[in-house]
Image 1 (tube, rainbow, N blue to C red):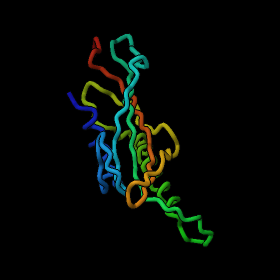
Image 2 (image 1 turned 90 degrees about the horizontal axis):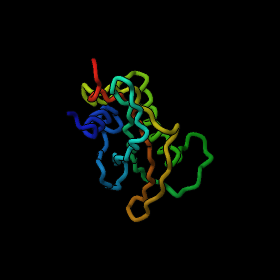
Image 3 (image 1 turned 30 degrees about the vertical axis):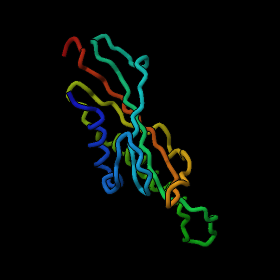
Image 4 (image 1 turned 180 degrees about the vertical axis):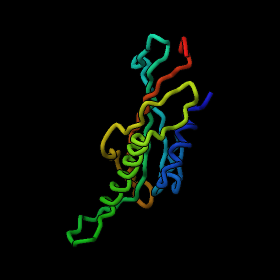
Length: 159
């Protein structure tokens, strides 16, 4: 039986932005460009059973991305980027990568008893979770929730 958490880690490490950063699992190490995976519970009542015994299920997790942040006002000089705007754009590339993998049907490997139907972010842009002023540099925390829908065939009556 394949560990879905490890499958998610292996999948995310295919993303260049994540592969070049420190990635943590259910642990916070708040430093610039560190990323972490936070598992979420999935409501069993949302499972949909089919007549053949297979079940449509969801696996949801959140990816947290820490970015250094500036308290500088937006500069209205052409071609002068604001760090905070650039950071949101960087986190947006993760969302774009996940959605591109869905289009390409490049999914995590949940094993032979699971057929992944889709992997999608639950929003179009990153969620700003807040600022951590207790570290240097000061960090912004952005989150992306990701939902995987899959069919669990482990109790399927016929093949």
